[in-house]
Image (cartoon, rainbow, N blue to C red):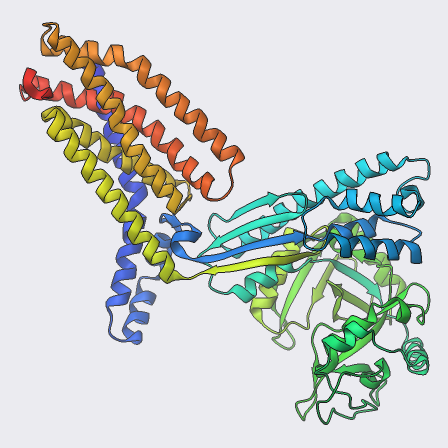
Length: 609
């Protein structure tokens, strides 16, 4: 009796914890239904404000739905390992850039190993890799091994950084998995602002502090470019065929749209205050040309031209992007940033991001600012100049500010990517699919119907075939499903369509254990034992078979989770939880119910059909 008392307490605790875990899901559903019942948006908004904390708590703790049920984004992203390898190279010359371009073009959209393709490209040209990578004493194979290790580390790091960004953005249970040597599969359920998420994922967050060269040096560089009559490549001209060809001398604004610019000097101008700029309509074209080898050759050594991230706007509404001549080698990088916070500036109430540095960064920042008083230092993020403040005095605190931000959302996104860290290499989106909420509703309805019909079929069969004993199995089955759903909700796991399939399979497994026990009890009754002895013998003799089958299923589900992706993992998670719950309900719950029914004389020899 003492043993049954302990089991009853255990079952009661399991049931109460399950209900407690599922309660926020019910509350979230009730709040959603209530908000949808109002006839006016004003009443709905008033109710939402009055119950704001309750609604937010219920939504946070409720059972999350996967991409296939709730809708959201599915993306295939690729880490640009070619860019990573170029960063690792030294002594780069025309041959290096030619081979890299050839290998990049031959790789195309395939998922082949970049390092192997690169090694084959250099071998074809009969050039040793040690000419550009690591030590001259390294063999090609040693360099290939090192580059492969760097590439693998970059993919893992990119995956973790993207996960951190998504977690800070607030997407529940994102699915992020690697595919091949350079691709990531990302599934984000419930996402509605696709543009913002896309920008958040693609931003490399490569933060640099660079010295801005004197205005005279910039003007001489622009004159040299204009004198050289730098022509656009055929590809650039075709891409910008809708750009304006009107000259941009002085303060002149573009007058009309025509064919693509014939040369770069057509779209770079100088204002009366000496500011070098390009108009808004030519921004993309100029950005593509500033990085060309032909233009770089015309600039002073260790310098490059960069565009501002945001345009300046005149009183007439015309937009111009300033152009800066900055030192190519950064004075400091974003690796020293320890904290970033989106806020509003005290002077102009414009969005900005405050940054704090570690001890090493603080020391360097104090030295850099102290040595460059009166000069501009550009804060460059992903190749664009966000601001270029003049250093007024030495800054010993290690604090800095990014301004020139258009809105608070952008400031918050910058905060997120700076906190998560810079990606080791740029990433690009190869494939993007959006699952609409109507499709998710159809899936939810179909999944719920499948669970209800599955439960009804199993419950009716057990009662018809095993009579009163079937009632005990059905009660245990209800608790089984309750435990599975509560564990998913409690650990903030996502319920997916394959997960619903796992629950349906769990129903069959749960009663399968009861079938084994009941058939054993029937055998014992046929041998002439009384009901109490038959139940004891049935449970004892069936236990080993039940344990073996559940351990086998758990092992298979674990392997599916480890080696599977996406939907397979969702199925495996619910199957593992359901298998564990099934073992508990089949061995413990039904036994306690039997003991209670036997004690109350509610069960007889004919209770098993």
